[in-house]
Length: 96
Image 1 (tube, rainbow, N blue to C red):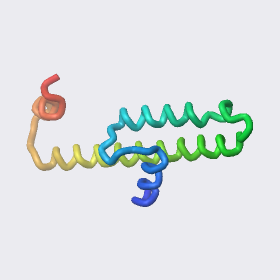
Image 2 (image 1 turned 90 degrees about the vertical axis):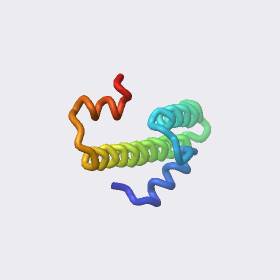
Image 3 (image 1 turned 120 degrees about the vertical axis):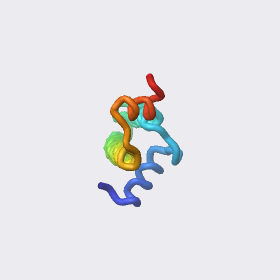
Image 4 (image 1 turned 180 degrees about the vertical axis):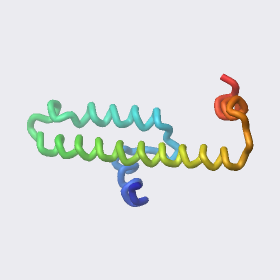
């Protein structure tokens, strides 16, 4: 697991709100990768390559962090309640 400082640095690099969903994170990642693609910055390819690498690493850090805490929340939620699988599904997804 990454340190809190690494997560905050990644969040800042990607320009994310504290409440960003995985879908919003993915959209921001794709937009930044498109913006900083080395093919678009022929004159300064080294900077673009570094930014692309940093964006990829930040995306990995943030998504691992979010998925880890979503998993922990689900695990704690399940421990706090005794539900059948169908009750859990309905509680989690509203019976969809």
